[in-house]
Image (cartoon, rainbow, N blue to C red; front, side, top):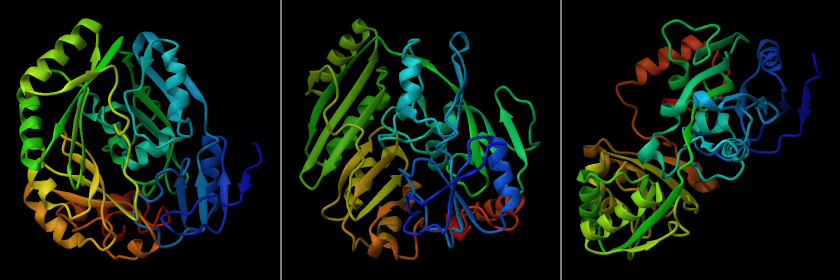
Length: 382
């Protein structure tokens, strides 16, 4: 077996500095690390989203998956690709594009790897049409806390009875095991695209536009709202044949009573906001105007207007308890995804623990009974 590559820890994990770091190059090496290590282990990809969960209570070993970087198999006729967790999404997209295909995920973080995207459940504007990683992931290979290698879903050799590992590991932030390989359902590259942009003056108008689009027969790839203290701008993206794109652009302008067309969406499209405190909001899509009205003064960001997901930079002194209470009636949540040191010191990263916490605890106990993997990263300090 190739010697394990130890590295100087290059990233912190939500402000926690790892004591040591390794870069396995094979699934077997990942398994060997977990079997031979007695301390706490925090898996990461390229480190682009390490702030998307609570800080680990300790990190004796950072396990980077960036050298698990092979595209194992691409079956263009089946619209399926198998790629290791450390493969950068951008590199995979470039390879797939040569065959007129794509993985329909578009989180904007430069350098993001497939494993990191799954672990953080990261997505972008195209979630409206294609769904998130949970919807496109059809198989995984994972290494459990005791070094057991398990497979689930597409191209299965061995299953873990009773669990859909792909869905279980999506958004788990490495707390249930190390994601080593992924299998994805692909889509053809659309031959043409175009966008409509519409100014939005207040929350009520944003809600009306989103409702009209949701109830129409139009098939946008994304409907994004750029929002700030002075209102915002709505961008509707279409991707299809050239004739369909142009017809839907005309229909959108007629439906909304305003708008300008362009070959591509505006520059802000799909970009996460930056600031000392950045939140990911999720809520029932019909409640868009109420959620916008609940934002603190000075908030700015983008929201998928027909999907109920938004990312907002808010003032560092934002009362998260009050904001969460205001959007709770709409199944709303506000999760910290980026924070400076002062904001990160706040005790409540995820928000209230729901009724599913008991089930989450049992799953954590089943997969990581010694609580060695990403300890404290998940809801309720799991």
